[in-house]
View 1 (spheres, rainbow over the protein chains, first blue to last red):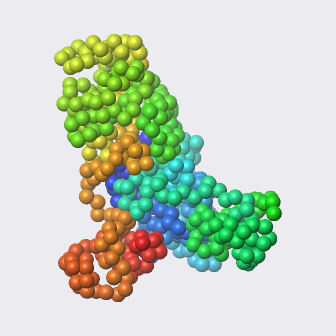
View 2 (cartoon, each protein chain N blue to C red):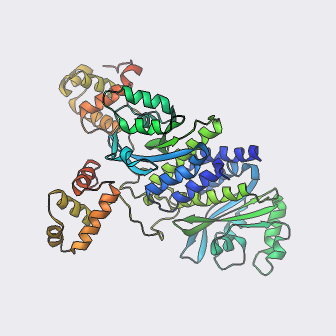
View 3 (cartoon, rainbow over the protein chains, first blue to last red):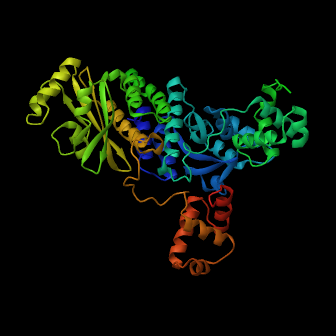
Length: 255
Length: 253
């Protein structure tokens, strides 16, 4: 029986056995992935502004050579899944075309996509307590007729992996659950500050423009940097712009 | 068959989503009753954790009157009851409620339990060992007001719940089981020990293994082991890039 339930059971059993992340990736392929013709899987953990590769299964050596992490502020299916907190399914053909057209050749994804020409690449968040803390990838040789049930299974994997990643057994240095949790979202003043940072203004001039103290600006920036996972103000501003925060919120705080 | 299996699977994401917020045991039981076990008509349940390998201690229950809750708040593991047998023998037990008392003659609770089962129209008594890291850490017992029919699907579901509840119960955030439990030896961790951090820092400064061993007063082979462990954890084959990655991930602070 290779139904979604027994697949999930396989995965959950592996998760509860203090397994190496590579073994968890294998359980993803052989467990829930089996129903979708999965050939490879990856598990990535968000640390600051990177998605760090924890576990891999089924990739060719050439596809994973030097593959340690992804820059969270670049546009990949896996970074999108992280920021949007949702499952993203890309047909292989689209991925192959996309990366063939990119200036920096991303041969890794091209090779992967070309290897499963009639398949698809599933990118999904790993969620703990309602918040993405990593991502997983599942690469399938076929494109199933994704039903709501299938999407529900992919969601179930997101939460199961979240429970495991924040568990001490996963071997990560911090429990994601206990780690400092950033604010749920940025305040409109924080966004306004980031926008001015993006425009090249100094903290002093931002404070003057908004009619707040310099230390308030600094505090807001520190919180925003933590939220966006960056360690400097410029990258925080770039990340905010990449996320479309400047487009969505037009309202300025009262000055 | 397909439709019923879908019904069970469809509840899993919701249940796992809820569980990833690390709810209290009563809330977890409620979520089980409303979710994965809804179609099996779970009407009461207990979660016990195994303490000192000798006693099951209740961490939560739903659907029972207070006197029964109290009576089963501590169960010696040797007791002749399915709730003790399931974790003792690491096996799922399924009992018919009717005649439950006569099956467990001589156990403390023959008539007492039958009375309570009759009052709730209980038909089946199911006990599932809660497993984690290849050991039994507790027991999840529940009753249904429909006769439990064993099928590959129901067994798979119970196995999945056993592991899931194990992850939840041993998670520090749930506060159910505190302290380390008998974890199998793990050769992988990004949570480096202080000595490993020192070793990698020195390696990153270009010291040789023997220099590091000399400076930290440890053997060369333990330095080698530490470096191997960290290179594996950081998915790299060179000590320089292990150091560089560990620094970037802020694992050496």
